[in-house]
Length: 558
Image (cartoon, rainbow, N blue to C red):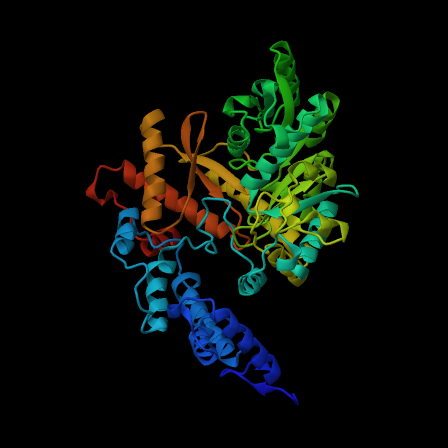
């Protein structure tokens, strides 16, 4: 532009008068520095120029380098991860540890060939990662991330916004508030509902019980826990949840100063859902023992069985007894996107707070979750102000600082990847993916029922299928040993990754079908591998060791 010139190599442009003024300021500031720190304006410019290629900025050079680095990173990612035809390399823990034990983590000088460095790291790290896009990677609620979300991750890391204060994330703050409002609408919360993005279910469940504790102490005793600490009666405060609830309920109780003993578990029905009758029984027992219930935690999608507690009945009990009602929908929350299955979340809209994870059934990269509250004002009990970050006058002027709603200060702009993928694919595609995983899980259960060597432990509610290989010559400890051996052998061969759990003391195997690319052909193959592995482990012959995935595939196809 007229009146401006390129003042730095690389193409940054500013008016020469502005640069001269800046140089004069720097030189004045340098006068107070020690002799070893003093640099004239030319030396300062030269020193800063050393770092220009380290950051993406306004210079064409940095932008060219960014494209080059990202292109190479993508090439390595595809070759060493996405293009692999098995869910894991099979490398054992001690071998992976040896890879890095002698590695110089921070050499004194830069890598001579950064492209070779990327190749080396790809071969050592990416090659031995869990390939979450492979249908045979079926152990945990660990989803393949959507392509649009991978693009959004580049924007999130490239802009590096921090969601604690508005002046660190201007548009990001407003977008997160808009996405939270949409989520509250999705779960049919009333006007005035609010929430915040979190790292996932652990943090969200903790926040739910934190608010429950604070609200109860304030409503019952006029006690401000944030200012005064725990009340004297804290040792009698209790939280109720089902026997199948996530372990973070107990973890949260411990962190809140109530202790794990404060968690009272409620028996489940034959579908492993919390029994409302048993819940009423527990409440009666607690009253007789002079204990103080403060919250009920229901689960919409348990980790092992995908069970959804009877939310309407539990909501009614919570309302009748004046208890905080928290729903852990970390897994099952994605049902809200499905036209076919959304009705299974009936009653969730009556919850005081809800946990939902997007790095499960919403197919977002880890980590990405949210904590929602039916009455946004309840978040006031964790509100804090810091003069340097979120002074009270900001609120008076209408400047939102999201740190007042979060347990985190520095926080990633994770709402962006959910927003991008929702806009890119549309709600219906998300719902179809949820339907697909539930359909395949149900079909897989039928395959297990038809295989004499396998036993289905529970009818799948969502996408998790729990089963056991039954050895011919025994039960109990022997069966546990065989099932554990099947899982270990398949993983070491890189054939498939299964989870393990226990049902009535018995060690069982679990297929977690969260990948919408998974078909019945895939699960049939994995079940056949399980049977082959079990038969070979039962054999006394030296050939009991499993073949590699390619040979197993050939065996199954024959």
